[in-house]
Image (cartoon, helix red, strand yellow):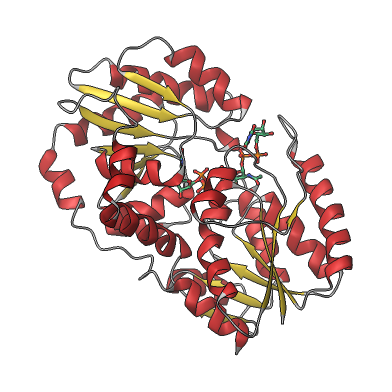
Length: 370
Ligand code: UD1
Ligand code: UDP
């Protein structure tokens, strides 16, 4: 069976890596790897650490790319690639433009689609935007739906998709995270090199790790978020480290508002092991990332999520995610609340991870080869 695995952005590569490794181990599958290149600098370190070499790289990234140009270029190039490869199945991940366009190109060519991380919903088309639509589109086009949780499966059933093959797999991000955590635990030299990569951090201060990139927050949302971070940085004994997403809509407000503060470290996006190291080291995390909401329960960390809704309710139930929106006062208020209550953070550190046991990729490949 010829299977083409498609990814384009950093989180898709992290979460598809375990699936690709598993496909490569299967004697029943000819595995072909395709990167759309929706991301470039942010993607290459992921490929390096998981030792993944795309057979095809469509190299579509354009600085400041619009959704329509990105979608149409991906659709056209994927369609040509499928014509050349004639795959039996295409695998896409999640809710990105890469996933939406690669699945649609397959659907138009009557190629079976498997959807990794199917069924997550906010039930709000505007948040995350445009990802809620992408994920629903892919679920409609796929014949195999790999839902990370029972809740995600229930969402699919409530949309009358029960005639498809739906399996609950756990989230492949846990497979990837455990791989890195083991490497950090067993390879002292590797772990020491990473730890030595942050000489600017003061071990006596509380560490807040920050990320942010959602399109629906561009403009005023990002200004409020950055101003909140500036307020938090004015408190004693805290330091913030923020690998800033390369999108110019993020870089500009963040650098305007946060540059020049001696306890705010604005750095380039990190490779995955260094980011996992920082998540482990952080007192708490402030982020709008989807993947980080899933990783946090495994690491026992609180994430203040700068969004109004989440498609990861399991993390809210586990107590490791609290939605704080993009209101400056609310972000500051909730952050200071937790910083003043180490007991609360200690309680959260014992949370149970609802996103799987690290065997999601095995379950997915078993389903494909059944
Ligand atoms: C995309 C996904 C989002 C995902 C996020 C992960 C869509 C619509 N959005 O958003 O779901 O959560 O990736 O990070 O698919 N850039 C670079 N180099 C890179 C990556 C980005 O320069 O390696 C800059 C470019 O100017 C690019 C811009 O960032 O045009 C935006 O990238 P894009 O992939 O369109 O959107 P993201 O916000 O990254
Ligand atoms: N991540 C990383 N380096 C960074 C920031 C994040 O490797 O500098 C990882 C993070 O651990 C998670 C994924 O990237 O696995 C999340 O990516 P992002 O926030 O860009 O996308 P989302 O998950 O929101 O789609």
